[in-house]
Image (cartoon, rainbow, N blue to C red; front, side, top):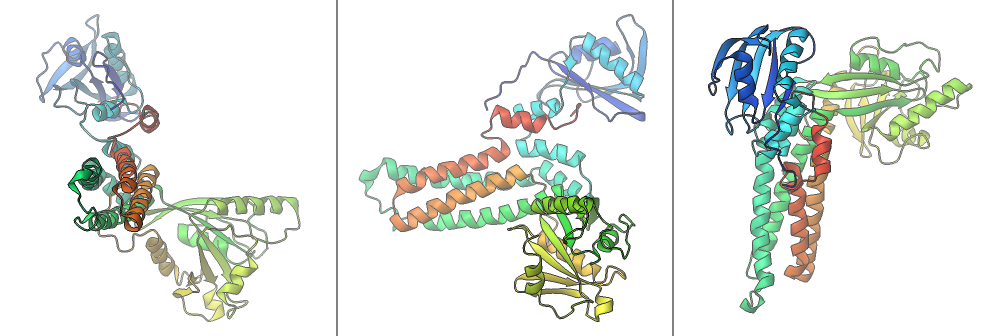
Length: 457
């Protein structure tokens, strides 16, 4: 680990949310924590024992009646001595207790500093540290459950298992390089190719699970696009289950982007309704269309809405061709054939030339459940078995990087059969995995991660 712990430093902060509550907590961690607890409570702390005390300042004036809870290192969350004051939850009281802790030798903790110390003292790994922040920030029950599984070590254990497989394979490869006099037929007398394939299969499964975990955490950005009066705003209102957008028969009613955040069976959806795509007659609507194109560029998926009552037999390819100049390259598209009630078509989900097509009525709601199930399927959650864990974009990128190195090493070994060609790729794959849990990490990465935490965590 490249970051040193200052064992002479004691930090303190209010560990509960801002505002009034029944109970509020002031947390202290570091070598002076127990001395501060004794000075404020006039009691000798006992490890893992909650003691009721009247907290007093330097002038013996009472601050509050509180429970004092103390932990001795290394048997604490941070791995250091910890003291907590469970006070009445008024902001004035908590700030008075915090000021007295600072007066007694602690300093104000920075955001995430308690969790950072737990990581640096090997109480948790980096994935578990991030899971704490994800649990606090969860917006759905499914996201909270997956963050809890990451915090308990579900993600870390799978990464560590792959890490150990890589280590064993590297040992064999490096031995073949270092002791060529043994005249080992590296390919014929070993199962290196089989081990590599097993590694890639296990990594692929982990990567799929991590991608689902990232979607549970971050959600999907869906942009609703299409011509004016196709029913885009009606679709937004149906998905949001409220009248978010104004719906009229006048083309160009929606002139700016409208955003709504909802969830479908635990999947967060960030839905963006956009101005109708057409040659706009005025400058304001043209600006709305420009913004619509910008939103589509950053979308996870575009819901292209067409009025199926006007041209119910028009092929999917023809609809896509009509909007070819408006749709960004590389962003997946689901074609929404709206107004099925007027077109006389059956609501439901189908595939047409590898494009997902959903027939529905945004007016009546027929077919909306098919669309919801489709969204869960593209997020990989339709058949999830409940064992998912939370993951972040950096985790997914690291796993993808690891997969690339294994694939290159596998190809080189299969075509050339030389240990030297795979050794470096195995090392880089191992480094990529190590970045996930913090086996290998930079000060910049740690600073970026822990700075996003709230103060007191």
